[in-house]
Length: 61
Image (cartoon, rainbow, N blue to C red; front, top):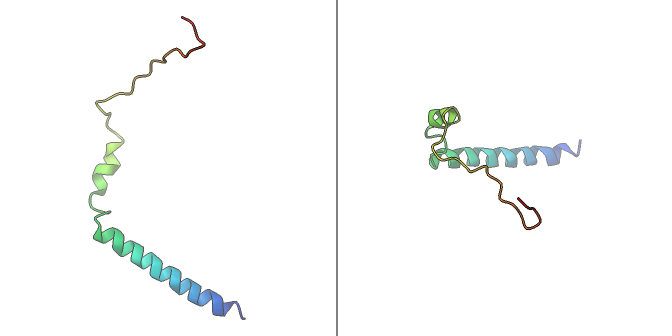
């Protein structure tokens, strides 16, 4: 029964932190444009990373 005196205030503190984090995210436009980020993975980027491997010091051609 004594653990309830610890768990209830701890749960309330975590609730306040979660609500604060949610309102901070809304205020800072974290949920502004969800459609663009969801469709971004479907399209290929114009810039490509070169995949050629440079020979290191010990390798010979």
